[in-house]
Length: 334
Image (cartoon, rainbow, N blue to C red; front, side, top):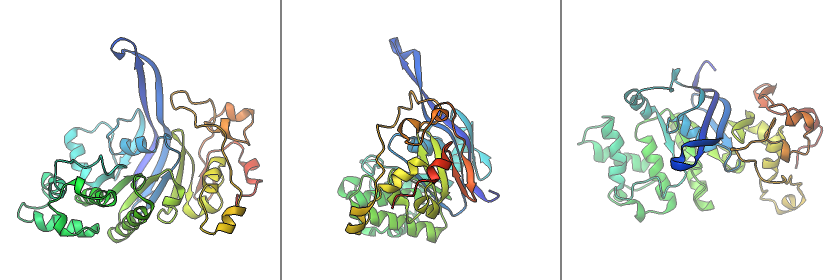
């Protein structure tokens, strides 16, 4: 971790739930992120996966300080992001950018592409006004869009083109870390491949560090060097991408891997699926002990009492499971 660009330690982001007259009485707490420890090395692509509602987007928004953490630490380039003034945070933000999930909502419909891409460069004084047209045009070409679209508005583009513009906006300030929050979930399958290939090419050519967030393991399979699997606000498995896909250790990860379809119809027909029972618990009222135990076929009485720590099982591979010995006796679904 000596070269870690981003270090997260026991991060928690909780939201109070209030009701009553003028919403003055707190009746509960949504534990969206509930004790996450992660690090990203320079130049690494980390995949963060899990079901919708598990806290992935809240984690990303907390990292970029769009949400205020309840507890824990976030170190970016060795500097804590907690409690910074708006001016200090403004100087850090160019190096820490985010691509949001919905390209239809993340772009201002009243601004042309030129205005959208020029504003951050002007605000941070990266280029002069005279050099702006060339800088914006070069940025457009970098994400695969023609310069002639520079004066168009967002509604004149397809979903894939809008997401390319959103990526260009994130690249405008020459960041060191990009958090891509479900960047292809709102797009057609054919367009998804184009955007993922674009992100892969940019991360390789520009040496970007990236956290790629998705609910679909197949989306991050060919891009990420490491995979973090998240369930109800916690990381339950973290390891090299090849190990997480080929030898998943946590029961939840095994279920996710078993859901990835095979292109070979014979193999797809013959493979064994792991079907999880029930729905994910509410972060407003999580179960005691291991949050996954109500849906886990391996759970015993201890799972309902003890929160399993994220522990190293083999070099570079961590799992949070009290029943790991029993899980590993079961063959990996094929």
